[in-house]
Image (cartoon, rainbow, N blue to C red; front, side, top):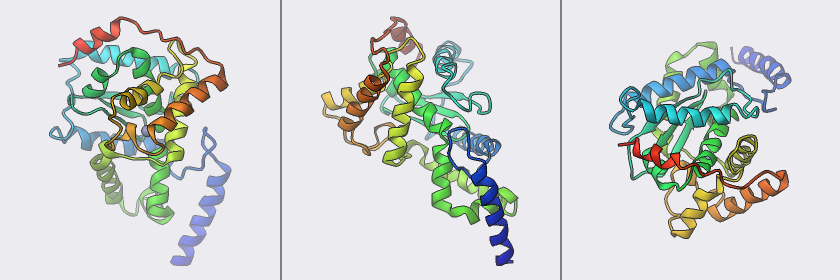
Length: 268
Ligand SMILES: [Zn+2]
């Protein structure tokens, strides 16, 4: 049986290697499995209102419409590879003390009211949003799972030998979502993509740097939420994001629409 499994793995690897994803990465999960996993994580998150007090979409329809318009700007940049395939659902978590946002597989995104209110202008927020879209589009969580669980466990999940394992993995992602940390390479990749997305919008393409700059200015670089993951450290990220913008020659003039302040007022 072990030998048979090895043969199946070898066969799947050969197929897999020849089928790199749209971002040129080898990801063992299929796109529909990313979405399935993300939907499962989203369900776990919505079932845990104590940890994730999500703003009601009907009650705060105006805020959600505003936010979805911003997300659409990025999705329509022409740079998001899985624009059509992923869910691209965004939820607002009502907690003013948390300066964070996170992304789970399949395009399920979460932003805290604390982060929206902390940022001074829409360009800065768009930078963060671009970073989170990139984590999902580049399939960073699925790629982490490959490393963490190994191909054998994922195979059992994919072949359907052990459906409870998908739930277990989803539960684990949901449980650690807010404190999720990616490698230095993944963080840099997401920062770079944020610049690439914003370069195709009217916003300052280096918008993502402002968040780190504000933290540095305020001496608040401690803490470990996902977006301010210490790897690489904030000062390096500011430099790298600005360097990427120079390299691309994209516009760094903030659009800074006054409506961002109205958006903040739509929140509780
Ligand atoms: Zn990140």
